[in-house]
Image (cartoon, rainbow over all chains, first blue to last red):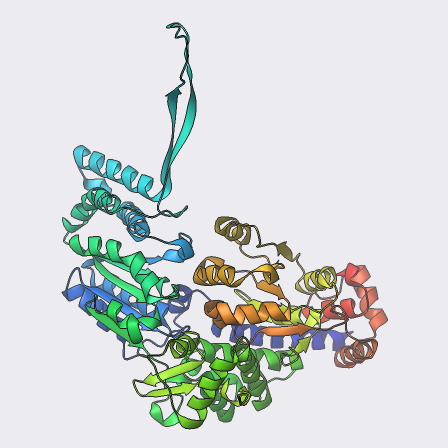
Length: 419
Length: 192
């Protein structure tokens, strides 16, 4: 029996060790939690978040976009920018992940303003700003809050409808009640009218004025818009709302679809003061060791030898989420096999699984494009099918002239069928 | 579709267990109906019920509220094979809304995985390489594999299976996942 207990304790300790490793290398953990846990390497992209935040700080009402591939670290940079602005003490910054609030697939004009208004009113209360207002100001803000909530959530009221009758009796009531609903901007999706946008500016101005009277600028950060499927769709959603925010001198930072950088999408990016791009980090060890620093900062390198670290960095292609995913998956494979350390074969298995998921769903045309890129380094970034491969992470961009097939996918690519 | 690793239900359960919070998996279902068996085995290994959630016919709001009904239990979404390209795109752009502390497992056919990888790049990115074939025998191992695994556990813990059952019946068996797995392998998931 003592032997059993001892073995059981060993198993429990081993499990705890791997659990701790998994906790630190969790690619799907909320980004805010990861930042607060001190697991983020802040200067990874040249402290891009400071560039974003400083521009917003120095140029109130500026509008900046952040663009990058899936899993490149955009949310982390936006949250770090929010944190930096808060630390300066001159800005009220509002981070909004819009797909937490509403159905992004049906989003239309007005929804961003609605969400901004709700967050602004909530932040104003949460900070206790209402405490030192006089009664008249409180009343104004209370009314403004109601208008914003109606704009966002919609309204429902019951109205009396008179029935048509042949013979009218003044002592009878001819009619019935019907429920009329005015849809809000955050749930059922209906096309918004320009006049709606103008109407909501008044209650928003009430809050903005109250905040600005405290010598605070306002910056709103919209995350999640990068997942909109095309530059056109993105523009449809943001055009009127961002214009209204600019009029109100509210600074904007937003994640945008990567496709606005290429081909016809570039016309959209010209509407903004600055477009920042996060590219894949170079997996080459001589390029600064950024990827390795991500793993070591999360204690990931404690459980693997140098060659395994390098293999994982290389297999990730410099995509942050893929890097953390591979480290976690390799650790998981080691745990399942009963190993004490993460070995080369565990990393190989993790990279192969990731490559398989990249390969799945590719058609002959896409495989042909990827094959040409792999063999001939030929890639036309303006062509729509190629943009699609960039957006879906099968092709990674390291510089304006350096595009490569994701290294987890490259060895699995089948030779294209010849016609 | 055999290019992805094949894992029995309890191994998938162990992977979920060691990952902790916010885990996402895709399980490639076998041709025959194995869902009930899978849910039972997974629930046993995780030591908590796996909640089955359906997506088709649900509004965005309904699915979101189903996932958040409890944010920590493991959920299995079982009908995404019915999702067409438009539905996958809608699920994909709203990816943040599906993120939760508890595990999310997508139960898909080979065609369903292809659709996910074709039309939902954001979901594919968070799933990463966590796509596993479930054994074609409905989640259980072959008899030989099961016997070998039981022998490995007996050797590792220096304990006979009969003793494991006796301790479980007496309520003194440690709740560590290896022992849960052991009981499942012995066909005594009822003692978990």
